[in-house]
Amino acid sequence: MVDSLTPEENLAQKRKQGVLSHFPDITFNVVVIAASAGGLQAMTKVLSALPPDFPAAIIVMQHLSPNFPSHTSEILNNCTALWVKQAEKGELLRPGRVYTAIPNQQLLVNPEGRFSFSDLTKVNLLRLAADPLFASLAVTYQTRAIAVVLTGKGTDGLKGVLAIKKHGGMVIAQDEATSKYFSMPEAAISTQQVDFVLDLEEIASTLTSLVMIEKAAKAASVSRISSLN
Image (cartoon, rainbow, N blue to C red; front, side, top):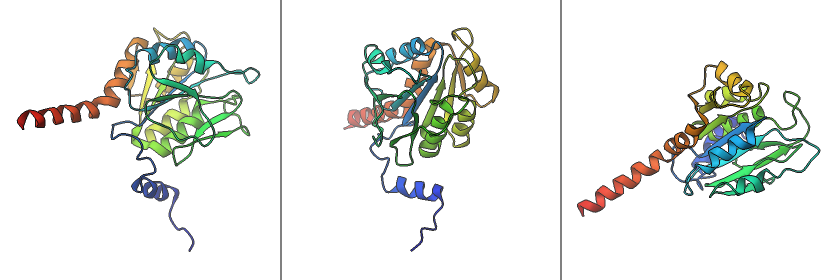
């Protein structure tokens, strides 16, 4: 029998079958952080301030030279209590882990929540770009995705922000005062689709509040029930 379901209906069916059920029942399942020039320092600041029990998956994407290996995972692993690793083809995104991109490979997430790579196209003259990554996450995680645009040159991330918002996700941009280069955050803000424009110091606490609010509410509910028994 020919499958007559649309891609959206197929995804909804997979959700019902529990394809993405390995994530806890939290408000957001995945956070994607994109940056370029000045980004490593900014990402370090954000990740170092996240709690060790942060329950969402995190993907960090910084524009990298295609000619050299990346040491982003090792650097970030030294600044956070979360487990950091380089993304692998076919790997399923897991809660509470930080994934980094590979130079010269466009990182994507497929509808089953697994990493895939493409080296066939360039976006904004970049082999590794935020726009297609944001778009792939938007389709898969929809209202449970948060995109964060940090310091960087150029406009990469602008189209991805529109995709995230189209599917009901949330967007955070770094403010001008704390951005080493404001071009990327400014481009995101220009879409008028950004939910928060924040000082770099405020981003981690905002992510924690957004992602863990449902977890905290449930814990409080359990505590109240226990106190009544």
